[in-house]
Length: 577
Image (cartoon, rainbow, N blue to C red; front, side, top):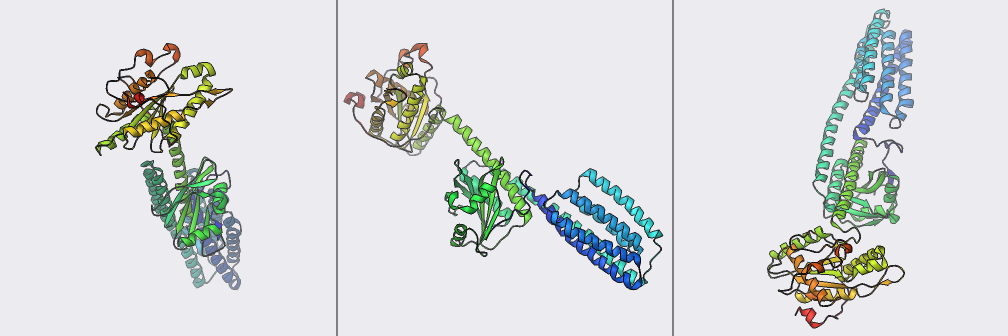
């Protein structure tokens, strides 16, 4: 059966109920049930003794007590969870005090019970009332205690036989003291659970702050929520950008299979996301979402709790908590779970923001390729891996577009931007997914061949890039021609750092330009350094150039995949001779 467990969830626009509020509602509801029973018993007893002994005071008291019990049962209790708790508690406390004072006046034998009963409003109001209201209540209680004492003195003495009066006094005192003790136990229990829940909340916050690895992050969220609600396991899902799929972020146990789920085929989960409701599904009840029931039975599970992850007034995902036996979390556990889920959702949003900022800091804003910092970092990592397995080498290609300034001058900078984006896409499609493509700035691109490669491998990739770039780019009224010169290097002596390797590739790229544009050159020792004119062929009007000089290199990076092949480079260019 699929059912909502949002019994105490506030209407839209009101803040979510906290664990303490959920416990308060449950505890006040339980206290009111006992108070209703106690006043009902004492009222009935008063009426029973009033008739045979002709005690009018006992009769009036009995009727008052029964009316009070009816008011509690029919008016007050149905409002629990629908209205703020403090005003309800205040009204009950005041009416109870009036009944106690009236009882002491109408039936003086109840004076000892009344002395104990005046503690009940204090005990019930202390956890829920604000200090100003509590002060007023204390003053009112003091005044009514004085009035009750005076009433007992002028009440005319007991009109009942001593044995009957003693029984009534004993019952009244027992009921009053029992209610006071019950409230003390409730308060102690509440404080103990609050301390445990605060510890759990701080522990989860600390756990989530210690990792930004997505799968581990999702697993920790699921684990904390499962422990808080008594479920055996859990899976954290995030809503994708389109709002159509739930992507598994992680599970409380790495052995739990996690797959993406389309909301269109998961009605219960769609409701959790769209309406931000908490739903429970149990196989024993059998008439819930058939897809969820089938999945539970297949996995040998019996209960499922779907809890939304809410941030900024919208659901960003959900947590699916599962149990191998029939299990229902109480309202306080559910409230704690919602608090933990809200904390987790905010942390998830912060993680997404962190990832966006990190991506922006490490990627080129125009093409989405790795920027200089990221590319050099990945190159250093690749060189570090090679140092642990001697004998291999990595490759680096420095791709510089030919006559790019002419493209900007003739077609405009918008067309130039379109060309750069298209070149970035072609480079990605030409290399492997494990390789890194970056843009150093302007019309300069770099490719890192990360896996151990040979000179033949890197020259093959260079041929493919030359071929991939030979077709013009559609960027407006007429096609824009594109071509590139490529410097090809592999790691080795004298090029054992990212900066050294990049400088060598830069020098080799200029050698390719000198031998004729639209080709590539494989590095060989003795290549001359590029001249200042080659570094800045357009002078100050050509715009900033991000060449790698001998003293300074920054860093960048990104990834790509395989493409075509072409060999239109002369033998001298290919061999570097």
